Length: 110
Length: 114
Image (cartoon, rainbow over all chains, first blue to last red; front, side, top):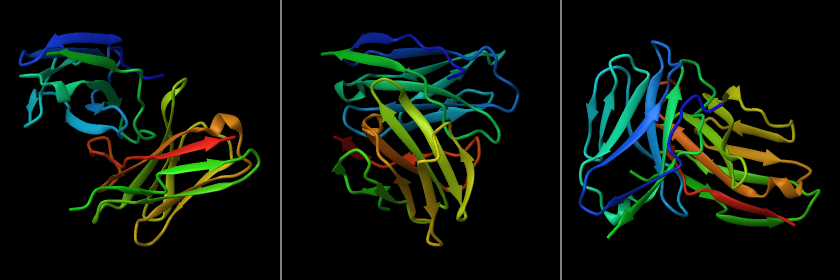
């Protein structure tokens, strides 16, 4: 049970913003939302995480809904190197590692 | 700072054999987790070690085991290999365990069981 729901795939154009949605309607108050991505033939790579408020780092932004039942990963200006599978993970306190779902396959068109 | 390293990168074994995979975490990281990735099941959590103790274990048979050494390096062992054990085995390290901790993954060991 991945505990999150994401679209199977999304397509965007290079140099445009990308908004990757994630639904986590059964989230509890102490669960963190993590995003990882996996490029072809590589191990997963951390992108960003948050608990309640929106978060920004050099890679992306994370917008968490006020009720915390959904979140959106924002890539401000996609490049071809951002083509990957993006995983939204709900991480519970004391959780057994990271529970990966099927993720969203992001395709970037030049 | 060097990243997570895993050895070997590729391995071919036959059914019934056993295999040991090694993981060296990022310097200063004391928590190590292992994952199995297959096309059918995706990424699945195997187990997590912290301070030489197994904290959590995923839903895998007892043929899968691991350990962590005092220098935080970790090994996982699979005994009596089956064809279905063919997978990419990933190791990840973090400073400590915890829901807010970031895990840093290695490149993985690709195991093929014939």
